[in-house]
Image (tube, rainbow, N blue to C red; front, side, top):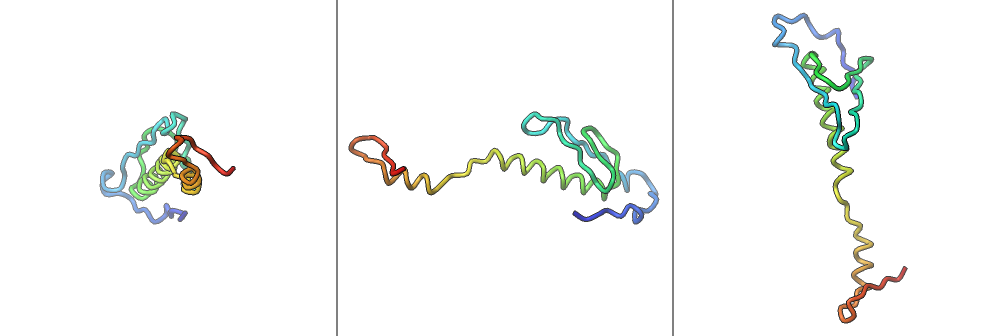
Length: 101
């Protein structure tokens, strides 16, 4: 992770140009409390935050990565070796499964 240099952010001409709202949800995909997101030494917890566009982009990236890691847990992954073993042991005439375990 790259550290954001807050000194590079200049004073805004208009607050709409440099700042934006970012919402961190209260609960995650598994209905557990959403963890805090830490950037440098600042923690952002669940709720709505008014931050610079650079920090907002970092928060959006981390939220997206956290959501994708949760979704990955829900995706079924086939065990191809186990499927091959089960197919080899199947007898179509008897309708029973046999394995060599």
